[in-house]
Length: 412
Image (cartoon, rainbow, N blue to C red):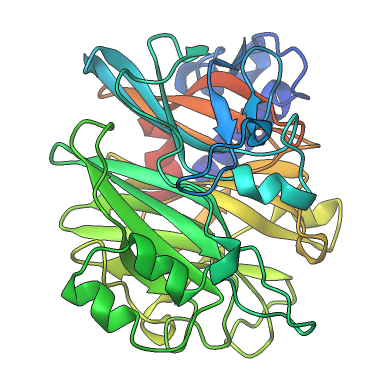
């Protein structure tokens, strides 16, 4: 049985190696006859590049009430300035569109330094082919404007810090979009301007300002969005030492919402590895109250193929997906001390805590936060779409499928 499982995993390794390529042009791989059993398990079109995304949208860096046209940038066509993608797919369409994507403008025309953080706001677009995107009728992007600098905390020189949003992620459950995103350096005063007057917010805003806040907004139609609710912050006991809570991603599993995030390894959280970061899993019953650090679980990776090339590599950003009893993590890894990523890997798990990683990188350079989303399901296989986010600001669209028989042999 162990030999058979190993053969199955080796076949996948070989196939993934054949399918992995730089993000220029990816030709459908050819399954060699020598693969034998693997030919029955894995489709020869498991990974195919379908092109770059064209998103007809503007990036707006104005505060609420501002109207400075110099802070509005056209990022459509090849003016790629896209980051942090997450897609929900509707086979029969939702309000006329099969694909709904949230992302933040960044990189490219927007840049990645200076006032680029003013544009890093949650932005929603729609499509029917996953390549050409537009703003749904009635929506004024971005959903949230940048936090007011006048509300910012003081730095050591007594200057106001500019807070910003990042790391958007959403789920669609029971007819409602639940959008989460991360606030970095966003003061309590800024949050009070946009938060609802709820008992949840009163409770979570009662302490000191947190370095990071994970907030949620909801919508039935993707156009009209609720006021902000705070899900969790980086204050103790949610994190032990005001950790970074990077790239939080959420999945609905039964009655629970499970989140995954990247945190820096300070050596004080009980994580025994020497990696620069670790992945943490939290659980919530209502989508707002998540487990504190000590009640959460540190994810275990059975293998870490990224360390074979650079010992300093570890997860920087991630995206989580759950389908038919299996958890998937899309991992953008790199030297986290440099606050960036380079390679992209896909990991899978049956219990959501112990993950196997496909041994060959999906993308080997210049990658950033990317995501996958289910597009079809049968007794034999699961079909997925993938948005590959690059540090150039470009989004690439790809498709792949995984045979369920293969996953059952590997992890049960």
